[in-house]
Image 1 (tube, one colour):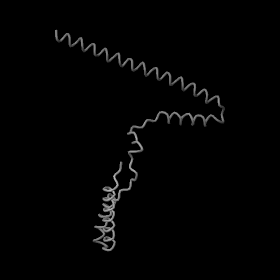
Image 2 (cartoon, helix red, strand yellow):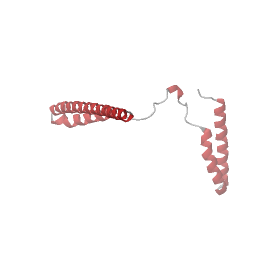
Image 3 (spheres, one colour):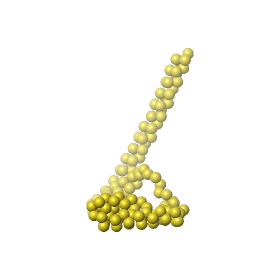
Image 4 (spheres, one colour):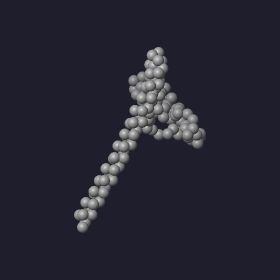
Length: 136
């Protein structure tokens, strides 16, 4: 009994899958027919324009079609209120100055000392701006 029920359910599920794929194929055929009809209509309009404007109209139609069918996958941009007011972060900028200054301290001490001092100033500025000016 269990085996017969399994076979019956399996046949039913196969039929459902077959029906769904038949519906998808029918839908895709309808879409293809609509596209072919629109293409014939558009080519008739372009050919009716004459030889001078035909190339321009064809290029225009292609550009409209490409622009209308391009899809981009990505996140929506955040609302204007949630964006940072300034992308400049002195604290983050002080890190490369510190590393370069430490390296140049060994090769050319005056420039290394200057860059290390500049990195410290940038780090203080960045730290204070984070603490004092909180973004909404």
